[in-house]
Amino acid sequence: MDFSLLTDALSSKSYGKIADICDELMLKGAAEMEGVPFEEEWPFAIHLLAHIYVNDINSARYLWKSIPAAVKERQPEVVAAWRIGQRLWTRDYAAVHEAIRAFDWSQQIQPLVVAFSEVYTKRMFQLLLSAYSTIGIQDTALFLGMNEDDATNYVVQQGWVVDPDSRMLTSLKHYQTSTESRLIRHPLIGENSINLT
Image (cartoon, one colour):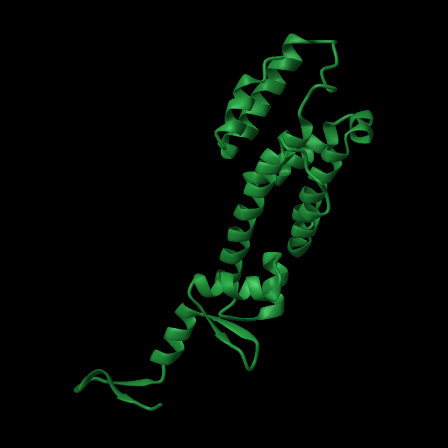
């Protein structure tokens, strides 16, 4: 089977295209090799991680169920890739980073895993941003899969404010809004005319 499209996508770091490439190659391979098992040479770990990368957990789950048990037994990297998918499927977001770090990924797959980890961290930060105006440093570190210092630095770079006494992080947007809410608006004098702080 010709994996040149997949190899090109991996080497050019076009990770968002890999799931579709793998799906098309798998369909083509199944049609061309009817009755001949091609599972031994199929890059299941890459295929699973590609679906996970584009946040298509349903397709990753379907693929996982279709992988022969013999392949799962002989290829621990496939099982490790699905562990990430399992954590996402069960919405155990903090455990995703643990699943990523728990396996020594092959040289071919390592860049895809690193790219997914970065994308996932950004997704988690956006989720935190939309769900919380204030959150503890410890919880933030858990969601972002970082130690507390790294998580604090990450969110500060994204415009959050740290209260070292309470160990809480506040989004700058919320921080500015709460400051503005302490201002009185007078219809005749104009906006923000009297500061009560």
